Length: 231
Image (tube, rainbow, N blue to C red; front, side):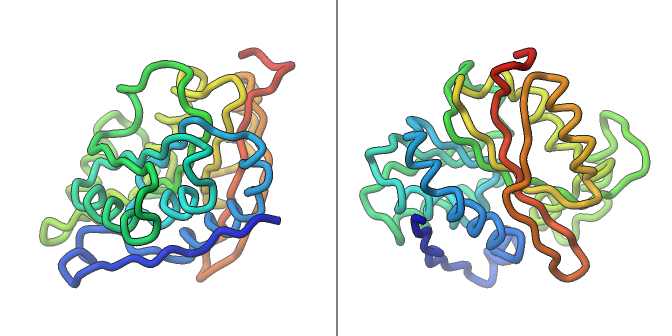
């Protein structure tokens, strides 16, 4: 099995109020990707994208492990401070690697069918019992303290799925024919329902790692196109 080293990173005291610091969910995702590393190497992704890289440890670890032979690595984050830190982490751990960062919201600006490997540790904490178009932004305003950006890294709206559902709805357009998506979910995100919705849309989902930490039951799932599905 291949090895995925945990990258070094550095957050100043000010950055800690602006950028999500790696925690149990981050390390679970790294462990899952290490388990899957041989399969990822066989995939030889030309474009690897991480949504919301935060500190940048995941995209940096993949870039270091896979190298330039597996193409181009891109982090996309709505938080400009996270974009800066991700770039610094990448340069600290794998100078010369092809890691770039874009300050944008999700992947609506991407052309179709480009992403071979997609990674997302989303805002997954349920923060509402109702769903409206403005519900999540209203909660972010409610929960934010002293202008901190961190609330956007965890507030997930109804079932904790408000942001994740936007990505899932766009998945068929985004992913290349053999693309693979590694997604972190919380038990309260209702993984069984997520799986059923994906299967109805021509995808298949498999849990590749799970862990219970500090009252949370976390899952990393692998999502691929179903060759016998509807896509």
